[in-house]
Structures are given as structure tokens and as C-alpha cells.
Amino acid sequence: MAARTYRPRTGKVDAGVALALGFFRMRLICLLNQCQHFPGFVYQKARLCPHSLIEIDVRPRRGSKPVCSGCHQRGTAYDLLGLRRFEFIPIWGFAVLLLYHMRRVDCRTCGVRVEELPWAIGKHQLTKTYMVFLAHWARKLSWTETASSFRTSWDKVCQAVEYVVAWGLEHRSLGPIRAIGVDEIQYAKGHKYLTLVYQIEQDCTRLLWIGKDRTVKSFEQFFDLIGQPLSEGIEFVCSDMWKPYLRVIHERCTNALNILDRFHIVAKMNDALDDVRAAEARRLAQDGYEPSRSSRKPGGACSSARPTSPAPNASGSATSCATTSRPCGPICSRRTSSNSGSTTPRHGPPNSSTTGATRPCAPASSR
View 1: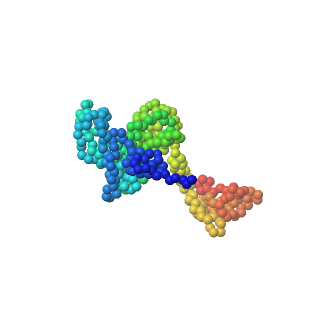
View 2 (view 1 turned 90 degrees about the vertical axis):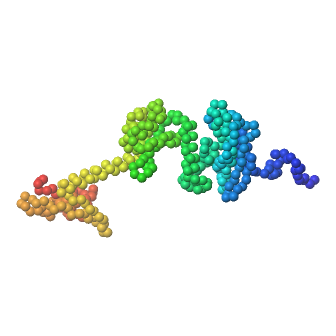
View 3 (view 1 turned 120 degrees about the vertical axis):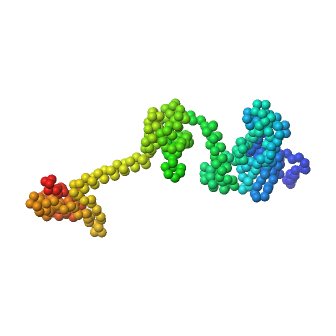
């Protein structure tokens, strides 16, 4: 028997059958109802406008009462205001606008107030969803690139970030804090810094606080914010060697171990080595030695700077290494053999394998 071909009858078609057969036409309003459905409001009509713009009309559902923006209670509709436009997330490169005539509420508690909308806040022209979307991309791109990519302005990206940050601070739960890190960042030309405090734990890494300047007073504001119980519960603090930070950590985090970063430890160690080198160079200069300027020759021999002139002896004549068994400088070509007691010339710097002892010639005044 030949297989029959199913053909839907004219009229109403079952939704499951229509979806299976591909007769369900996906519309933009259907997408909005799936991802952004607001009780009490209806997406009425969507139309494509010039300049790559999509406008969607929104109206209140019949019988629904507006919500007062003051006390957040439902009241009776008083009148209608002018048309307002709210920017939504762009779709396929088209800017999306929600058009809505806002109502005023005759509230028994607050009087006549503008209604509260579930998709917008205050006088912002951006929807809440769009502000969260822009703030998410502002973490990956610069604010200018984010604004140009989604056909909006830099100011609106800034408003979106401020809204998300304010919402996060309002709903933030500090909880127990075991490890924090503090550092400064330069935000303008000159010595203008911000103090940043992070929570650096294995299961929680987040920015806790930002303060202006890097002084004792500014850093103490963080501990005033979290309170003494949380401050005493901190076990580890990672910081650099900036003295105001170390002072506040010592006073406020009494039970914490202060861990210094390796960069500043190595920098301090290098500074200490430079001080030791400079002190040794000054001491050798005072003893009458010139600084050595050794260079490697092609033949492999090492040459050094000429040592200082030998000091005159008791008779007034200069003592040379040719007439004495002791070398005349820090690096001398004469070495004393321990076997025969004779002096044999050797070229190059002293080696650890040399059996003879070397000692520079001292001035006549010290003999």
C-alpha cells in the first residue's frame, strides 16, 4: 500500500502538528513573549522602519491597573502621558525600540504619580535588559567600542554600568572574608591613585571596594565599611610595601598574615645590593685602588686597569714588584710559588687553583 501524504485541513490546526510540519511561523513578538514577558502588558505590533530600525508598540492589558512608582502599590489610572521610546537589545544589526504611552496613577498614599514599568527604571531611555547587556560587553571591550558596536552612545554605556554596579552593591552579601588583596592604580596624569581591595579566595574572587587616594584615611574607610567582626576574621592580606597600607593592616587586621608581593621584595633586595656595591667601591677608592675595567681579548687573556702607582719606600724611591716578592696591585702578574719560594710571572686574573697567596702592595705609611 502506498504511503499517504498528510495534508492539514483548512481552518484551525493543532499547535503540535503545525510545529512538527513546519507551519508555525516564528515572529518577533513571539520571541519577545518567550524571553521578555511582562504581566499586564502586551506587545501589540512590530514594524520595520527606515535606517535599520524596528519599532514595537506596547500597550497595557485590558483591566490591568498601573503600579505607583512611589509606594509600589496598584492604583487607578488617572491619565495618559506622551509617547516614550525605550531602547532594547539590537537584533541582527537592527536597533529595537519599545514605544509606550505611560500612565499616571491616582494613588491613595502618594497622590498622582507616574506608573512604574517592569522593563525600565526612572527616566532612563534604556531597558533594564539592554543595560545589563551593555554592561556585560563593557567588561570585554572599551566603552567607546561597545557604544559603536551596538549603535548607542558612550553616555548610555556609562549609565548601564552605573545601573549594574548600583544593583550589585544593593544586593551584595559580604559574608565571611578570609583573604584580601590591596593595591593602587593610577587613573590620571600625575600622582592620582585609587585604592582597590579584592577578595582573593579559591571559591570567590571579586572586587570589594574602591577608594580615592592611597592614604591611611582612605584605606581605613574599607574596614569601617565591613566592620570589626569581618576585619578580625581576615587571615591573609596580600599587599605591596607601601607604608600607609602596612600601617592600616597592622592596626586593623590583627589576626592576619601579611604577604608581600615578590616584585617589591626583589626590588628592595636589589637596592640593598646596590648599596653594598657602592660602599665597597668607596672603601677601595679610599684605600688607593682604581676601579677594575676588565675586558675579554680575542686571545682569551684578561686585561685590567693599571693599578695605582706604588708608594715610595723609606729611601724615597718607589717600590716595584720587580724588586719585591709581593704583587703590587689587586691583579698582578707575579705569584709566589709555595714549593720553591721563587716568584714566577703569571698572566691573567688570580685563579682558585693557584697555590701561592696573593696580597696587594700596601702604601709605605701602612708598612
